[in-house]
Length: 440
Ligand SMILES: Nc1ncnc2c1ncn2[C@@H]1O[C@H](COP(=O)(O)OP(=O)(O)OP(=O)(O)O)[C@@H](O)[C@H]1O
Image (cartoon, rainbow, N blue to C red; front, side, top):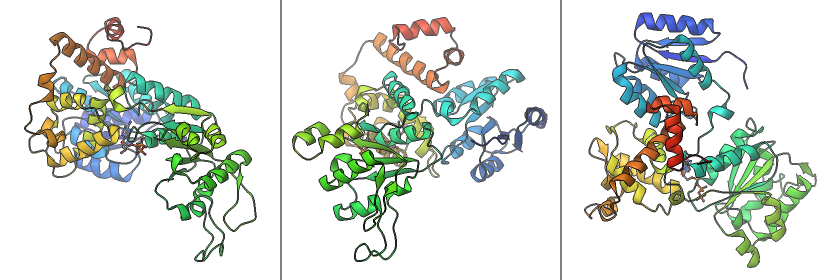
């Protein structure tokens, strides 16, 4: 990690407020880039890497929300700390639901502000926690991934299609000591069988007709990083034998080469197939299964953790809802309800695809059930046939809102309680009652 002072972007049109924040941040040893307008900020955020952005909501041109929505589209979007007036709290809460890191309300204590900003500048390992979801089931998966990340053991990620196995493997890599080395993903089902060996292990010049140059395979390109073998169940039996040798001997040969080359990377495999069944059918080597399956992590299907549906919707809305030409304000409550009733056979991928299409085609200001499920448009709403009690609906809504607050505060109970405007004990009690605490 770099030890240079972090660069903080400050979006503030008030000269007095801007001057005092800029001076104080500089005194604390940070570099500050100060913009008076949203447009200047957006242009600069695209060009430079910032440790965090401190952003006023009311600006003379674009408002802070527009700046944020532009920034979250960048591959390494900086965390946003919003500075709001009392009248903007609803908007600040909505922004946090869309992934903003924190907000302070004017007038604020400078020490409190600096503490919150300091939290955002922590190394990625802690700041990234909570990336996969907010439900207890996914937090458990995440905790396991974080624990395993520190080891070198081979990991097998299992789960139905679209559950996020690739996302989980990247998360594991990012949390590991290998994060600065490559993450090399190979889809074993997508590469033609006759090319697979040379794609995996590389080849020497002249190894076969057409091999005009030496070619480095995925295994070699992974270096000391992570080699992610997706859909491992599709690997041909002869290549399974070669992979076994790679794992056991930690060496490999390029096709047509004589030299043994050392392998220092880590192997993570993924499958949505039942590998034990494939072993029984003679399609998968049992010894290889034992080797790749030292630690096995199952990603649950989305229907088993519906608490993540609204969270994922917000995430995808932040990704797609801000493209030029869309004037959507947000996700309507009915769309959220309809999504909660859908079984999601394609899991997070289906949700992402539906959100992308819905955002592109929606006509109104709020995303509606018909935008998400056009195939059901005109049918009577499934929700009306399954009406639960008012109390159950209230509890559901309360539970989802608490989970969002906890996600927004990285699981920090006191901060979540502040956000929800209840006492810490009240929040704790509610979490126990709603089955959200581990010891409840
Ligand atoms: N936790 C998540 N947060 C955000 N996006 C997610 C999450 N999980 C999955 N996705 C998105 O859903 C899509 C499918 O995810 P991914 O490719 O990781 O699934 P998979 O289980 O590897 O699928 P397959 O079995 O088909 O290979 C991707 O576009 C991914 O970005």
